[in-house]
Image (cartoon, rainbow, N blue to C red; front, side, top):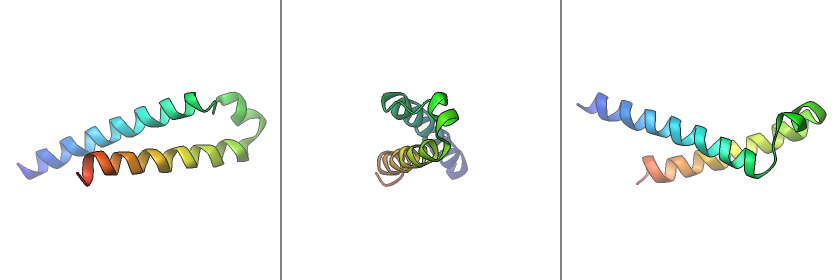
Length: 64
């Protein structure tokens, strides 16, 4: 029973994380064009987005 619950939470967390990263990247203009023209800036911005998305997922699904 616990394994099913944990697997469900894990699945929800991965889905939410993926959606948040996509939405934030689109909203902030982090595109493949930026990746092609300035890779370091793209990496910096994507790492920032991933960190914020992870914090949201942990707050909403894990810690609550």
